[in-house]
Image 1 (tube, one colour):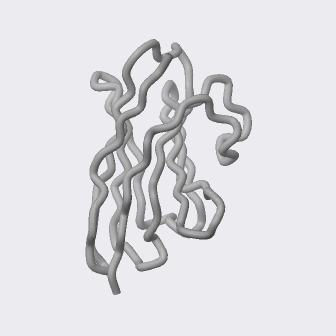
Image 2 (image 1 turned 180 degrees about the horizontal axis):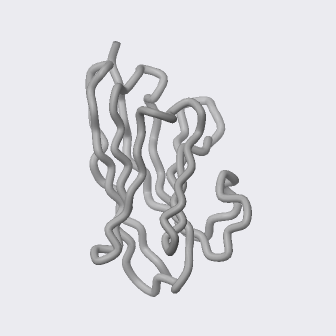
Length: 124
């Protein structure tokens, strides 16, 4: 089993920044992908970003490209999402996820484990 513990959410004004963290513990597989997704009220969960843990390949949704940066600290088994120039439309609960053998990393159902979510609220 893998546990994912998120932190770093909060309330920020438009144009501000936040950094989310997601620490993985337990029996992490040797090769996996970690992703960030978000869900706003009344909307479906949507892909934000992913990183392949071994090679470090990253990818972003168009809506956050150039503003968000995903990174990892291998020694700490921790995933990060640096969010800059935040907009009100970024308001959502943000979830980190971990998947083994992920083929389509922008698809939520590809992931095996999920964090509890952290609220990000951006005021205008």
